[in-house]
Image (cartoon, rainbow, N blue to C red):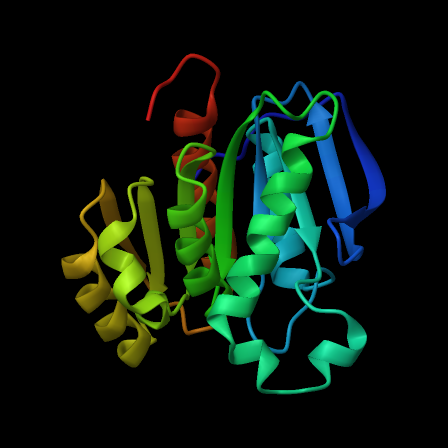
Length: 222
């Protein structure tokens, strides 16, 4: 698979997101045609090497990225919080509202990228800000945890699952039946749940990059 074109520069800013001042990293390539907000999975954070690798690939597709901690340190210490989809979705909405107030970003089309439980949070958040979220990608996600919200999703959604992750693949196929929006399921050969096998994470990242780039480009309607 061909790599994305090289960029002239990427601006990196450490930011505090929303009312809870959640720590984040905003990376804006030049040029940038849209911005993707990451919702990481249970036990992960903005420093996740997998999400950072995906973000790097998205920059090559001329997409800005926001990686942020959905929970503060005290909240993350309570394991129940990392599986509280409504709480996590609320933090994603907080990040979306924060983006809408940032000069230079407020007019950009927005995508959501979720992994594991973060995928469910992204789907729920998309139902709460349907006018803002123009594309969504789940990598190794648990969309089933979004529950009844799946039927209300209107955002074009790409589900990416590893071929060697049979239980999550089964759950994603079931979620596909509940989603009424534009949707697609991509199965990455040789990949397990964490996409640790050589080349599999890059394959997933390129699929995500193409999905976002098409739908977040200026002038392309949902």
